[in-house]
Length: 464
Image (tube, rainbow, N blue to C red):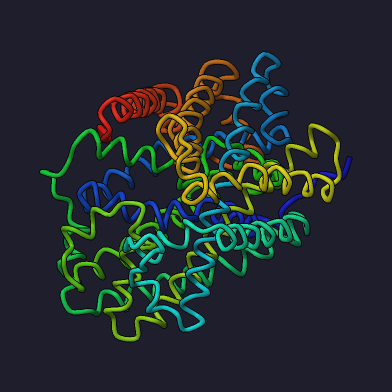
């Protein structure tokens, strides 16, 4: 077995972990949820949950990883033999997510290429199919075979190359380059969007909480977003924690990761929501949900001065965000295989690529040749997304809270955080959230997700 790798230091760890947290969840998912659930009130609820719920769970996972020096499968078992099952449960999540995430990453790469090669106008238009139906450029693209698979394979291949180089030379090095570029592009594009006529109305909607828009659905949507956005309950932070040096402060690192994660999500909304108000028809466009990035935004860029350049920069930024997260997902699975089966990094990478291609193809073809195949009424990609984000991740998070709060006790995590005389300033907050607040919230998320899928199957529309 290879010697356990490690990050070079605190900055390397923060950049890599923040890169994992900052992904499609921030730039693709966060803006459309904010748009759908009241703008400013959703933003306020999310921030409150991030600095409490998100902080506690991320601290626990990183501490477990660093204390054991192992990936999720082995880490839980090392701390308590009867809880090894939780490691396997956590390991399933990235194995499900990475394949379909790479499919979406391929879509982003395709759009980036379209904008950079001068085909931006095509992405904003409609295409007439051979059957005579008129569909959007995006719908036409994902209904194909060769192109979606090709872009999926390209995205997955680049992810694998970075992971193959290892922790310090691969993941850390790429994250140190991509994260600053991502931040600069986010600020520039947001600044440009805010200078457009009519953007201030969008800014007001986005940052000023309107409590008349507050509902239980707003809270549940914000809590669900935390898992997707902050790479929680999927073994990633345990794996990255296992590479963290003992002398580095866990509490300080988690706070920095939170700032990166929430900051990029905030900037993503700042780029998109005011721009939609500026080009008109916000009531219709803000309800487009997941299609906001691939269907609505190209139309927004087309209406902008220099929109082709802004659009190209935007999709470069989104691609960087998608890659930093896919790298962390693949590294988590590779680390799992290395720990469990005593594989070398190269062998583990090859095995993981094979698994991802096998599981990713149905998602890639789920809007084309396999469109008629449904699981619980959902297309392959939507089904994998639902099972991982709305079922497995809340279950893993709930068990993690029980494990830390009542089995190994919060003192185990506190002691790891306070090693080398690092004072745990938020110890009280951590204990209350892990033992009481987080479990209640997670049970609500899980119950709501199950009720929603049952409601959808019986009525044909979402309860949420």
